[in-house]
Image (cartoon, rainbow, N blue to C red; front, side):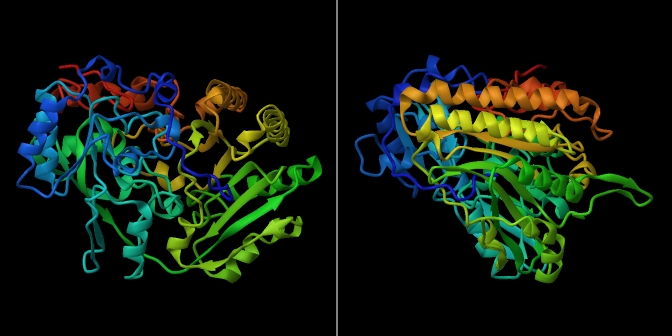
Length: 512
């Protein structure tokens, strides 16, 4: 979940060398060893795509900065050429040429990966931004989504028909990237992950073939796509299951970071979201209808405790559920009923800053002493790095029962735990290491707390690696992220991408 109430900053064109020097183990190591795009490559691509609607963008073109632009400056690298395809066959043509020429390849949609997975240094960047066709099938309750769509666009299209799909919590995030990694969203408590609502996908494979993957067609590939899809091809269309959706209660409350208030707030959070065993099965007071975030932010020179709230139901029910939180006396609140797309559009995109993302798992109940310790560490960080005032530490809140009820893909962290996100944001390149190291330290503190709470044993019967790949993009490996599913993924990687062309995010080593 992206930070709430953060301030947008102006785009500053990145220092590329500063931006690429730190890329972690999660990114494939082959990219720097490949040749860079030259004039001959560009001429070849222009010729191959001449009869199509694909656009070729070069570094000297006015459109280039936007073509390679990522959510975080630190993730941007200078592509040798950018191709904007409009059809799957144009993706295939570009891909096959780049492979034959030995060029590095990257795929970009929303560009929200903070580790450079949607960038290439001197290679071919396939930007899917012109593949935005959306078709809503109200009879079958399906939404067909082009590979370049952003979640905000899909939300608005579905909402016109009184529908919604399970998607990201930030409207500027790409549909494909978030979905392939699992995909938590505001509706996850009721309908599961984005991959649980993925019906089929059109994908361009490493051999150039355009295929459809679903439960009925290429089912082994479909299993791999749901959790590890970045490793298997380029998604050009997704078909998502839609759900009837009305207005939703949403907003934010901000509290002062004083121990007495924090202790009461944490207790209320624990009471609302802790899952207990009942005769009918695991459940919580939130009943899957609420999803929120308990966070630490710093705005206008002050640290605050942020509680983002949503309730998928009538306002009266929502205000009754959240009544104890309002009685704590927030210093700010803006809760209201709103159209569902507003839930994912109230977050400023804040493109053009330096940022990174570290994930960590936690279990309920949250200890107030642990939360206060993180507040203290956050405030110390603000004193050392005042320009990092947009940074966030957040505990994502939901009932994970629905997530644990499925086992339909390679996503390997279905358990009765929740995700936290540690997101430093800063402006100066000379603070890159400082800010990332702080995120690592906070992540380690979460891991210590998880160990103390016996978190390693609190899992669904299918197991959980307690790492969410869409967040954990520092030092984690494919084996860490995919756990017990890794050996099968290795075999499928050998079947569909033996040469490891798709190696940008948690590259899986092919094994026959």
